[in-house]
Length: 68
Picture 1 (cartoon, rainbow, N blue to C red):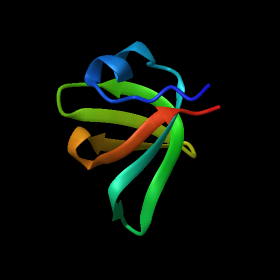
Picture 2: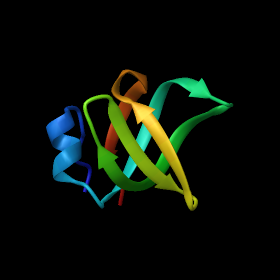
Picture 3: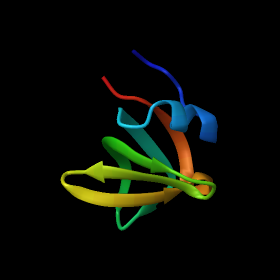
Picture 4: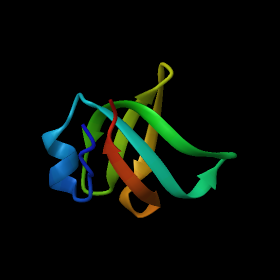
């Protein structure tokens, strides 16, 4: 299952799903995140990655897809 996520509506449709993100620029030395999609709002998304919440703005996302 390799569904690409591009719009806010795409992310909203898959709330609660496991997603893979690649950021345009590294944040604290990390560029790739895989976790559960918790929330979507007008600014970005929030993931649960390794039992921690990570907020990412839409402008930071380079690539996003559903994770297997």
